[in-house]
Image (cartoon, rainbow, N blue to C red; front, side, top):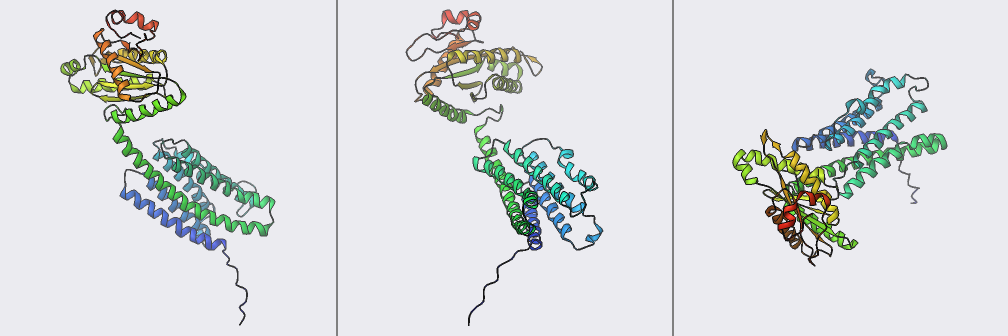
Amino acid sequence: MIAGPTPALSLDVPTLAFVSIALAGLLGVFLVISWVQDRNVPSLAWWGSAYLIGASSVALWLAPAPRFHIPPEVPEAMTLLACGVVWSGIRLFHGRTLKPLVAFAGAIAWPVLCDLPGVAEGSDARMGLGAALVAAYTFVIAFELWRERRKSLFSRTAAIVVPSLHAAIFLMPLAMQAFMPDQVAAQWLTVFALETMIYAVGTAFIMMLMVKDHHVYVYRRAATTDHLTGLPNRRAFLQDATTLCALQARKGQPVTLMMFDLDHFKSINDRFGHATGDEALKVFAQVLGTSMRASDIMGRLGGEEFAAIVAGNMETTARIAERIRAGFEAAGFMIGGHVLGGTVSIGAATATEPVVDIDALLNRADEALYEAKRGGRNRICAAPDVAHAPAALSDAARRRAPAARQTAPAPSL
């Protein structure tokens, strides 16, 4: 017996659309259940709702006539609504303000657009307009994900590439109608329907990956951040400082480390209470953060001691240190309704050779800090380099710290 040719497997668009409804519905339920289990991520509820809205829109679109007397504009607008909900969920996830009018503008404007001449149901213009709007939403979603810098490289790359690729494929029907015969375009529509299903699964996977990365980021930040000031703690600072020292060593460039100590901090606690002392620490942390460059590394070592490391020489660091000293002298004058007159003493040490031991550099900066304390406080002192050559002295520091220059063995900045 001779077997005849095996018939080719055919997948029609309605069958794929039905599978898409079931798949989107299951993914929506899965995301909503995930939100119920983790109420700290409300974006999961938004994304789950978007999937359920999308599944409902396709179900209404495929419903047999008369479609429960629902105008065709309704399921089409629901598709745009689902896109807006996804975008809003991403903004909420990244801590950005929601913009409901912008997010739902497509769904609101769609019935009006359908009344325009030439945009009748089933027309090429209507299909093209809808595809263009969905693609625009998808590109905006990809841009919103691109703005986020905290995710891992894999998560961020996937979150950008997948929506962008889907948006480009969503524009394929426009090109197919314009440049391909109807028979070939119909075959590509099947491929397009399959891609939409894959995109739905991929997007849900990316959303869960984003949530996982978010939890990792939160836990890592909690383990490496000082809870009072929001600055990196001692462990995180030393890790980042070591990395910066290695990078500067490869470039053959110096690093300068600064140590900060709030003057008379014990007296502040004794006179005004620990709450005011904590507020003084927060104010200094704010001054430190706003006075330094984005590439500089800073942290709280403990108590009233802070540190920062700069990719540069003593001359560059002198300008930064003076901004910090003057900034805290102004901001610390009155804190919490009390006249504190808060000031800070700063010690700095430069390493022109590769830093083998970060603790040695810390000790040199700490010695310079105590010279600043002994010299009268509210000033900046520089540690001599390893060859005991005199450090550069800025003109502004010369005018502010004559006593330190005369009494301290370490030169002042």
